Length: 96
Image 1 (tube, helix red, strand yellow):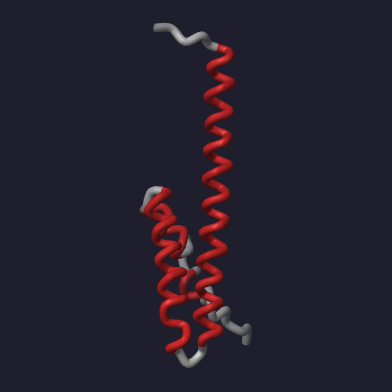
Image 2: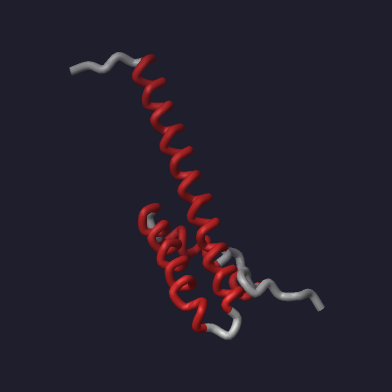
């Protein structure tokens, strides 16, 4: 029998869409980042009160890693969008 991932268990991955992706799809970027940040805070808040503090710290780290990755992707998307706007502006004069 395969060992279950205690931080991201298989029941979050059942069906066509993983739970975290469904949550992301239902929120705008800022709200999703807030959700990830709140999840980090939740696990850090309670880790020393749990029987397995390392598990809570691992969950906090998982959400922090996801937040960093999402933030970096947002920055890359914004840079691409800005580069596209600048390229469009160079090829098409702005008329007033």
